[in-house]
Structures are given as C-alpha cells and as structure tokens.
Amino acid sequence: MKFPSPVSVQWIADLIEADVLGNSSTEATGINEIHRVEKGDLCFVDHPKYYDKCLHSAATFIIINTAEVAIPDGKTLLVVKDPFEAYLKIVRHFRPFVAAQQPISDSSQIGEGTVIMPNAFIGNHVTIGRDCIIHPNVSVLDYTEIGNNVVIQAGTVISSDAFYYNTKKNRDVWYKKMQSCDQVIIEDFVEIGANCTIDRGVTSDTRIGAGTKMDNMVHIGHDVIIGKNCLFAAQVAIAGGTTLKDGVTLWGQVGVSKTLTIGENATVLAQSGVGVNIEPGKIYWGSPADEALIKKKELIWVKRIPELWKKVMETK
Image (cartoon, rainbow, N blue to C red; front, top):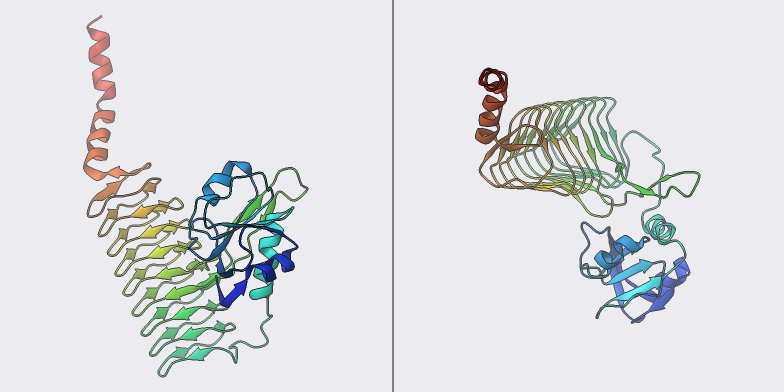
C-alpha cells in the first residue's frame, strides 16, 4: 500500500512506539509485505529465520523485534516488541474499516453506459469504467478499480480479504489475520464468471490483465498478477503472490501454488497441480505438473509395470 504522501519515519516510530536505528530524517512511501516490497517501503519481520531475507530485501525501512543485527547500508530499523501488531497499527491508521451505509456507495464512480443489476453491492472508493455489466448479487468491495467493457457474472466477490495469517503457536489464537489494505485492479475487456472470488492485495495490487476471461468458480488469491488475454476454465485456484504472464491458459481444476511465475503462452491441462515455475510456450499436465509429453510417456511406462513385472518373475 502506498501512503497518500511520503511520511516521516520519526512520525511512524512515534505511532508504533519504536526505537529508530539508522537515519530517522527520511520518509517512507508505503508499507508492503516481503513478496512485493519496493524501495521506500516499510516491511516487518518477527522471526530470526527471516531476518536476513528482510534486511536484504528492497525495503528501505524494517520493523523488527531485535537490535542485535547488522544494519545494511541504506536501511533504517524500527525496533518494537511485536512487529506484526505494529504493522496492523499502521495499516489501520491509513486504511481504517468504514462500514457500508447503502448498496452503492456515494464515494464510488461509475462510468457512462455501465449497468449495475439489482442486489449488486458497490463499496467505498470503487471505480468502474464505461459500458460494464455487473450482474445480480455481485459484491465489489472497497478500493476496487474496474476498467471499461468488463462483465462480472452473478454471485462473484471482488476484493475480499486475503487468506493470509501471522502464525505463532505460543499464543491462544495461533493465526492472526494480516490486514488486507490494497486493492484489486481489473483492466479493460475482462470477463469474470459466476461465483468467482478475487482477493484484494495484502499490501500491493491484485491485478487482472486486459482481455482475460474466467469461467465460473475461479479463485484468485491476494497479490496475484495476471497478464493480458489469459483464459481460465472452471474451478481454477491460484494462490497468493503468483505471477502469470500474458496468454496463459489454465484448464479446469488446475491448482497453482504461491509466489510462482507462469511464463507467457503456457498451457496447463485439467486437474494439474503447479508447484514450480513454468516455462513460457509449453504445455504442462499432471500433479506435480510437468511437460505434458513427458508425463504421458511416464504414464505409458506405469501402465506397463504389471507386464514387465510378469516378465521379470518368469525369468527366475
């Protein structure tokens, strides 16, 4: 999430009651989690296992629970007892929860020629472009941006909270929600089927590229970046932080794990499970997914196992 304007690090330190190590006269431009962090951002870390990764990330400012680390050049640390709670305090300050007062918020902007069907909900600070159709029982939640000529079928939910939790098993409640404070951006000529769910970014955008088409019951996780002209069949699910380049096709019931990259014009056949990065322009199949021709050859050999076993036993 980018702040409305750059914010003094000392002001943030006062807000979260942090000790500043390093340059306290600089300004932060936003807050981000580790997978999408950029220069000028705040990031938090609360476990020694991830100290090094966070300290050497693109983040300029790091909320951390120890001063006993080497500070890389150009970094400023904000030391607090509980970095996760400090992160939540910052998010709630800049993006507080505001309850809806009516089905279509007065703060929303809806373009000429766009049709909003009965029982659709349009939240706060939503922007919808021209000539769109939002079908009945669609929920477009706060801060969503929708382009022109977009169709969203009945029952779909846009900008629901991320399935993303801070985990500590030494407390009564193991899983505490990472507050989602960014948005979903849907570009022009996207079509989204019935009963789909698209989660907002935790701290950066979830983006659906222009011309992409989705069948019914597709789930897109937080901070996913989808390129232009992608095609997803029913029951596809993509976990958070994954990037799909232009022209990717995912057939029915494909599951994609988190923080991966699928290359341009790659195709994944039905019921495959993608657990690693995929190269552009190739066809994949299976779980774990591999190039389809390789998987088919493996399946042929698996089918021959009884025959081969019989021959082995007959030679004894």
